[in-house]
Image (cartoon, rainbow, N blue to C red; front, side):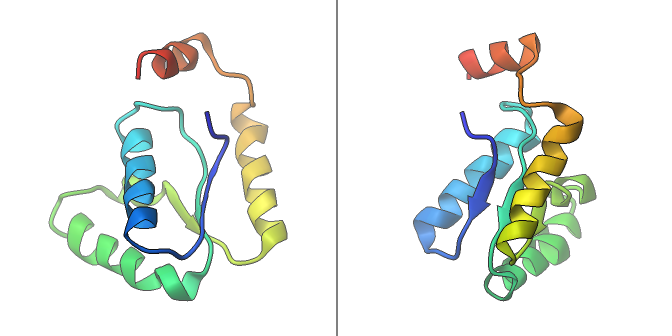
Length: 103
């Protein structure tokens, strides 16, 4: 029941959780949440690979890449989360509530 995924540099477990979060949002198994990668220097290679390999080979779409943001400054991270919820609201719609109950 997260409101955002803020992902710090990490190892295989972090990558596993990141990919799970992206997959849940991409497939509509959970509501669209901000997915923010902190440490652009750390994540740049992965994001480049996702774009240049997965998207280029049709395994993911350009729209899927829009699910991810790279932000390094704490206040900008907070701002991005609040900006997201200014348009979507914090309260789950009935459809989103059902989606989370039957995940």
